[in-house]
Amino acid sequence: MTHETHVLTTFTAAMNSFKILSLTYKLAPLELIGKLHLDENHQQDYLGGLKIRMDLKELMFLSTCNRVEFIVNTDREVTPEFVSDLFYSINSRLTPEELASLVEKTIVYEGDAALTHLFEVSASLDSLVVGEREIITQVRKAYEFCNLLGLTGDTIRLAIKQTIETAKQVYTDTNIAKNPVSIVSLAYRQLRSLGIKNNARIVFIGAGETNSTMAKYLKKHQYANFTVFNRTLSNAEKLAKDLNGKARELSQVMEFEEGFDVLVTCTGSQNTIIDENVYRSLLAGDTQKKVIIDLALPADVDKTVISNNEVVYIDIDCLKKQAAENLLKREGEIEACKAIILQKVEEFKLLFQERKIELAFGEIPRQIKYIKETALNEVFAKEMNALNPQGKEVLDKVLSYMEKKYNALAIKTAKKVFLEEDL
Image (tube, rainbow, N blue to C red):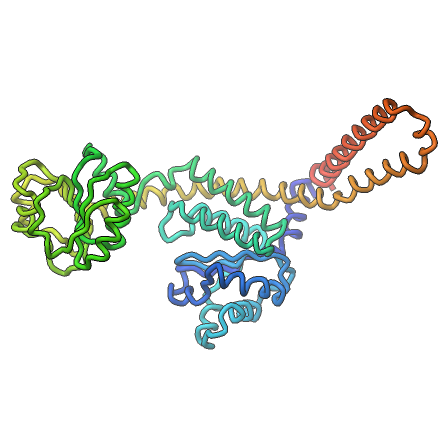
């Protein structure tokens, strides 16, 4: 057996207890996944008891809008009965049908397969939208919170450290996240490409999530002149407050006399909001070319406005086409990402083995320290008392130096024996 085979065998044996129970949008409907979601308050209430009850050495809980992952360290076999017991401990209100469905749709990963899955999740290869960086932050925060609760240990700590490093390398060394696929992000990029100045007058029609996200982009990049129209004035006021802008009811749109440079509209209306009359009123006599970003489906802007006026029209159809093209480009990077992940898994095998050796030899420094102190204070106490203070100080420095060097040599030799020699 070669040393490479030995490392792999030892790693596999040691990592058999590292397991992930994964429930994602790929197999389960989101409303079913949501039945296992726990906010931080409930995690504090449930997870500590769950770890003890299920006989888990370590536990990390990851929950996002489209997945729930239980990262565990346990010697127990993860059977359907184990999964059912764990899920019911999380939510005792599950019906028998819901519980059975959850168990059926859960994938269990073990050992290096679990590690590979964790790396792919954090590098967004397993995400609903490939290349979205948010997941790496979610993984890190989930670990930090579970660690704060005292649920994790050395194995999960090492795995998450390597996970974060892997994800960062994937995002740095590939183009997996370089081409935006978010509609709002694409719309903003197109707007910036037009050279719109930061003092531009920007009018929002609608104060929902899409327009609020666009507003964050604009505010972040120093745009500051905003007016928000919405059917419900309180919602307009909320967004306008965030932007330090003005809020108006949509019914007052024909009374607006301040003009605009950029019009961003996204409402839930089934009919057009901006017809020729409304548009002329919004112009307030201005004849310069305008930018319209229509993110509504169906469109908020009547086609006659586009055909009869000088405008740059950015609509959701063209943005979706660009998003689809960019998503294909991202997916073309998957193989390069998997190559990095494979390499990082191999690196982790060595890191994990080295850490196990360090822990196994952790008693040596304490024993060496005890031997040194016994020698100085008991065995050679008489001789030590005969030394002057300067001599004692020199001897202590020599022994401390030897102690430090011996400890380092012991660990180094152990790693060489276990990791480099053939069996």
